[in-house]
Length: 296
Length: 238
Image (cartoon, chains in turn brown, cyan):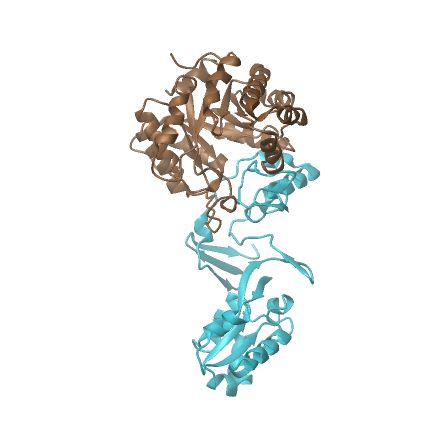
């Protein structure tokens, strides 16, 4: 059983982190980023061709984390693989010692650096979760028996700040029924809205790990508000950033992240910190938010 | 309706060998409605090519409202009505969809063809100036569960079990001017009081029904659909 599964099932508040595989074959930088998180998180998400930009695969990088005694959350999107490849990669992941898999739809290729690529989406994220659950039960989705069986801990994503929220909640319910055992969310900046969302999904009885994106500047907030679906940074937070001198921004970023974590903590089962390059701030945020160190 | 757009004239000229004699063929139905290959466009294409030095054997277009993809009509038009011109021509330039191109091949006993149009989609003619796509011809209709709106077509990712989370203000992540297909489905199911349909799990598509080429054999009171998923015979009056 993965450490993430153990922690969530024991009701312990978890912290997860995230690394992005590079566009190339040298893993030193991203493995260094992962090492920075070692003492502070239970598991580390490894993104799968994030933003539809070609990079080295999440399977390879996840396997490297396993070798180093770090626990990956292997991200797998429906964008680039048909149902044969998706199921095969899930089996490969388990054989490589990867225990957590996060099943996602995936950004459309038009948003990335291969805009002429054929979008696959042979399965959607709900169907992928169902396929992965079926593998865990010893069969493929065509109904054929496996010779040996994985035991993947399956996760999914949800966007609590989506407008309207109801379709997201309906889909979250379908993902839960399809086998999602934990959820990680899009970045949260409005704890009251998040509380409202959590009240509506209490009945699903599935752990929710709230997404925390470290805010680097007011410009970044405005960009996300305009361009990233499901992210809404309130004007008050943008104002705080604007009034902060450039040299003090990291301090302010820690302050904002810490405050949001403290506010969402009563309503969720963990936080997923996405540092987007400011990995060095993660230990301080965890300390300031009074989150129990995750390891040792 | 098979929507088509004309290829640029330079692309078409690039297909033709020096001294190649060409007969231009248009379609009186879909291509006529798209103004890509009706009678005026067919005549005009013959003239434009002639002005650029192409040897034009002649041109023909099916009657208004008659599709070029009907073999018997095209055979009569090309091998009887325009016999003298088509007998001597080296090739046919087709201003119609891909089905029309093949129909001309069949009608002329394997004649040499050039595409004059790009076939872009099958759609609804909303009005004379607007055609848009609501069906992807997948062979397995699921709009019973989506209020009549096809997610395979209207969702950029063809998702079957709800929106991806990439929409913003009801617009799709691939283009902020384009409606999120699942937002449209959600709004419609809600208005119909059928939101419960969205909670149902929709199985992955049977892509073998989508395998090409497919055929339909129509008999007395029955029809047989053939694809990689096998033969599916249905009685039309049962």
